[in-house]
Length: 99
Figure: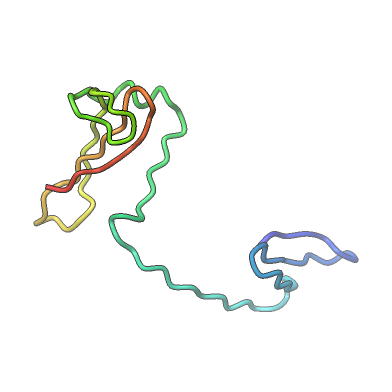
């Protein structure tokens, strides 16, 4: 919901559906999203953060380069093996491998 002022009142507008509501009304908006390891988003805002990761020999499925940065995360339950997340040194494509 994006706030804007109209006629001295704050009005909230949904950019997706166009619904508008004032701040005095209770809005009950729910949406369920199925969570899975595939839709977990990791944002690296600073490209220098990649440099601190170890480089390993791995073939990029996009460009074929043979060197990638490696990050290991526990994306599933604790009794499952960790997920290896690779980022290509050349094209910055990211892929993951599950053990």
